[in-house]
Length: 403
Image 1 (cartoon, helix red, strand yellow):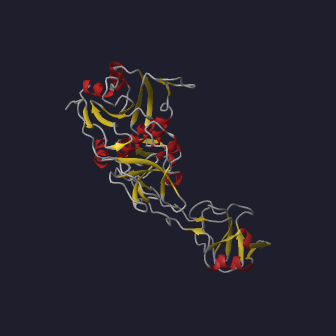
Image 2 (cartoon, helix red, strand yellow):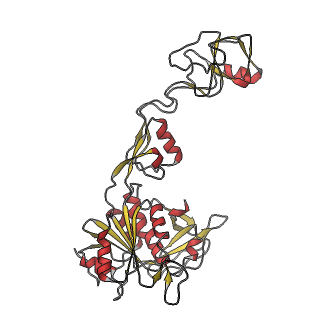
Image 3 (tube, rainbow, N blue to C red):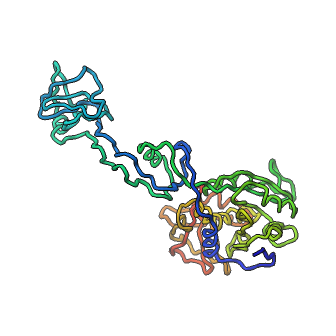
């Protein structure tokens, strides 16, 4: 089906998000080194190849002991202790050991260094701490106490944090299978835009070249290029297909005037218009289309409208594409700190802050061309067309750059 530029139907908020999530291709996998895995999503379960710990180890510097005190110290003076599995000690014997050292076979406990005293080759516990170390069999980390070989430690779809990467390393992994990030080309339109300095009358400063790629990365994309094109139909059409990308994200030109070329370019390319526009404010002209080998997410030219359109439609698209789960997994709920008006038949997206009691209050400065309200926001409130009352629950969107 080709685009019909005269299509005016706006898709409601929930339907647009479902369509966007369903449009995402099945997540593909790639293998990366652990040093490059932070923030990536597991494509397959993490299964440990060995017991964790894979040997009985000491949790303290001190002595491995067997039987009641006193103990005869064996091994060279100052030796780190049983360094090879299978070596043992007899009743009444002790061997020096360091944290992480292999506990000798037969040991009952590890007596910590500060709770023992050696006199002429004989070790005795000191004080109640030393007696309890021995009596309670302390400071031995038993092999397999955390996991057994073959256990699934993390499931596919889990985002990789520093502790999870450390866990993968503990299993002996050097590389890990993660979801490949969608490659995104950013296309910025507009003859009136200047990219540096203070703009003059009739000109505006570029708000997107740095901010939009950063937002896309926060949503899990790999940005492969940023291009600016003039308000020209041929240039716009060429930019949609020239980059080696899975997804093209454009800004501006999604209106229906003679100066807006994104819809006409998509029509010329035989696109399937999945979401012609969205019943939200701001951000209504946001569209989602499919051409031969990629998707196109068209965002409005106004800064706030574009960023909220990205969250509204690009959020569930990239969330599903990353294998991270349901489209609305990043949505939550808070209590409205004040009454919020609806959007006259559309869903209102309202940047907000959270008060000391956890309720949400709009930030102000919500015009489609304004960024001040979003810059100070902690969440975006999703206000249905009929509004919400003070104290009522309201859906929120997490800001991906807020952590």
